[in-house]
Image (cartoon, rainbow, N blue to C red; front, side, top):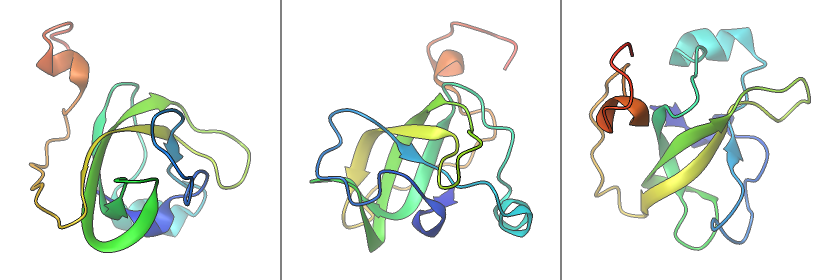
Length: 113
């Protein structure tokens, strides 16, 4: 589970039909605190306090789920990119925390994840 407070690039964008939301992973203390790092392509991630109904905004109680679509970057504010799959502005989505949550596993494309 990722907090919206550590999202960098694309916060406030007016749509989610294309592009992604970047997880900022430059602060070692924050990475340790939230268990960030080791993201893999196709990992599924839940983002707390993030509503993607009509764009990407910080909103307490909301929850969005996405898939990691690109790796981290050396440019500040950018990091692993998450493309939105679904969202709930009221927090109706209750994620199951699973370190192996990767779309390739669920689709049975790989058995080594």
